[in-house]
Amino acid sequence: MDFQFNDEQKMFQQSVRELLEKEFAPIVDERDPKGPLSREEGIDVMKKLKKVGVGLDPESIEDLLDPVMFGIIAEEFGRVWPSLLPLFGMGAIPAIFAPSASEDARKRLVPRLEAAEFIGCFAETEPDAGCDTSNLSTTAKREGDYYIVNGTKSWISNATIADTAFVGVKDADTGDATFLLVEKEISPFEATESPKMGWKASPTGEMFFDNCKVPVENEMSLLMEKAITSGSLNIPDGFMKLLTSMTPITAMLTIPRAGMGLASVGIAQAAFEASVKYARERVQFGKPIGRFQLIQDMLYQMNVLIETARLLGYKAATAIIDGDREARRLSAMAKVYGGQAAFKVTDMAIQIHGGMGISQEMPLERYFRDARLMTIPDGTSEIMKLITGYTILGKGFAAYS
Image (cartoon, rainbow, N blue to C red; front, side):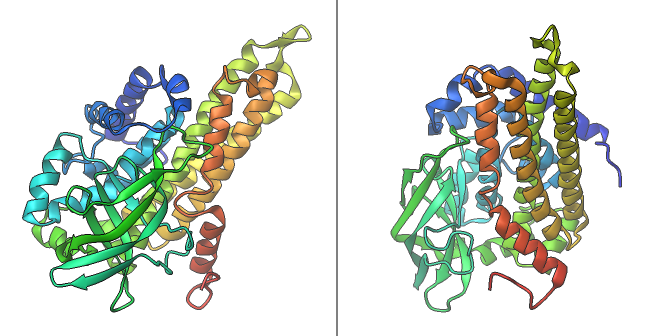
């Protein structure tokens, strides 16, 4: 396995890092505590990132479908400001299918995608179902050329600022689960903010669908068939293999889960870098604290956790590229291990900083809060462990069914 980025990946990583350091690192500690980004702020972020090829338009989104490139984006965002990641990670799923929607929808959505003015969300989680996504209560009743959608979604990233949602529903007639592409402008829905302990600037909310009318042609299987046959969706061969060897949603979730693991690595890396700097500069008992054995032991533990989580994250990304069915297991493991690593690393970083570690004058408490959040979204660590167990043991051993 090649553990080095190629030249294109190195250049991409450098350009993303430089832009994040220039545009967002100077403002994150002041802006993040103020709470969720407005839609205008979110669009401003997306326009700035589009300059380095990070975007949801048909051309740029190919990098979000490349697991290694998305891993680079996730890690770099995690290192500077993880609250920005859902704009692209969660927005990518509806953006993938937007060019395959009806002609009317394409006329509305594609210009937004190209202008970096499209904000999407992936609406699956529900108040009662949580991680049990096989037991959705949001229904879609077919009436002629439309589905009538009713239900509530919870803890949805971008919910309050999204113009387009990819909504998980249960067909009221067949009982089958599927997803619908829902445009707020055409099929209005409501959303309210849900305050949380970390990722403070990322809008997260509850969504309400009350007799929401959605065209039948916006159903996932039809969108995917049209995307593949028309060539509007350039899917890598390996990822296409996953899409056809497991349920499409299971395959699609491998990328964001590996990405979450690598975003955790980015958070941990920022905390580690701050700790190394502080250990060199902080003097106690007449010498830098970096000369104390217990400080060096913590730095060792932090460094090992980061390096291991990074390797597992990119191993999962490589499995997705290869179309290896092990991608499901590896992406689940990467998410769990990365989240746990970030939590442990940021905890030790606070300890190294002592009193300054718990001060809001330093970013350590933000790193800690953001790291703690990583074990919950996109499937809790516990569910990821059960997925891993099932993929190891095989059919008949699902602990959650």
